[in-house]
Structure formats: structure tokens, C-alpha cells
Image (cartoon, rainbow, N blue to C red; front, side, top):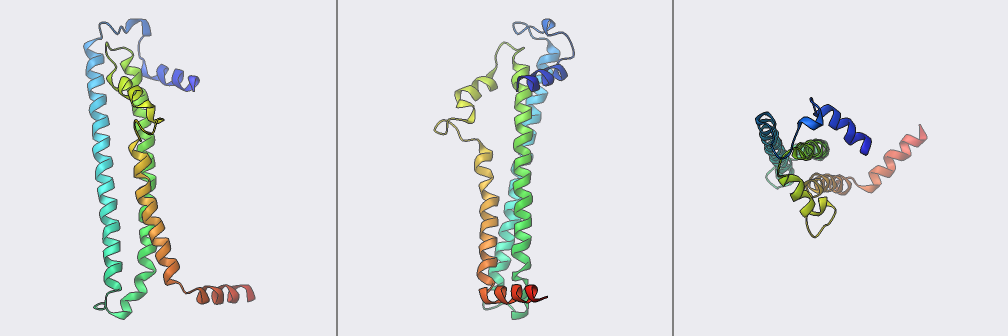
Length: 182
């Protein structure tokens, strides 16, 4: 871990560390810090937009499934009941992977932000993270992604249950029996 931080620090600093003083940060450092914080905010906005997008898609899939099983739908459309949960599983898996990607991206960005704060008179993000138990003390703070990942997991579970309920066990046994005889 220390080697990683040293490697990151060597990539971050373009001038000798002694030239950076926390008691009198340069205008350039303050400007870069402000831009970096704004970039983190934009990532959070994109993350929220992505979550809204995938939640809307999954809600739409569920609505279509509900319609297919209503008495008003055409029976020939019910063959879609296999495709829709499979599509929902794929959507939810990609949503899960995206949430994990944003988690990794934010972890890296906050590592850099904390390093930048070492050269500023105040380190509010580093202090806040410490006050929150660095995400390790559950009664102080539960990181958002620890909660976010459960939403696509729950959709996947729901779709798998749908498939299992709609698949008669006898048909599965008959299918595998035929496969084994070949």
C-alpha cells in the first residue's frame, strides 16, 4: 500500500515536494484543487444519471412483464416471458458493473484529493473521511456504493426467481434427460 501511495505521489507532483508549502499554497495549486473537486462532483452527477437510467429501464421491463401476464395481453406475446427477465438480468449486471466502476474511480480520485490536501492549509475532505470512520464504522457512515450495489443485485434475484417460477420443473427434467440420452 505504501508503495502504491509513493508511486501515485511521484506521478502527482511535478516539482520537488519542498517547493509545496501548506502554509502558503500557490494560486496554481488552489486552482487545480478546485478543478479536481469540480471533476469529482461531475462524476457523482454522471453516476446518479446512470443509476436513474438503469432503474428506469428495469422498471420498464417489469411493467412489460406485468402487462404480458394481464388478461388483456395476447397469449402469443407471452413467449416473451423468457426474453424479458434475461434482458433484465443483463441490464442489471451491467448496472452493477457500472456502480463498481464508479466506486473504483471515486476511490482513486479521493486518494489524489487527500494527497493534494497535504499541501493546503486545510484538508476538509481528509478530515471528513476520518470523522466518518473512513467507511469502516457502520454506525458513522455506510459508503453509498455499499448500498447502491444491492439494487441491481435485487433486480437480478427477482428476474432469476421469475424464470424459475415460470419454468416447470418437469420440463427441465425432461430437457436434461433428452440431453443426457444424446
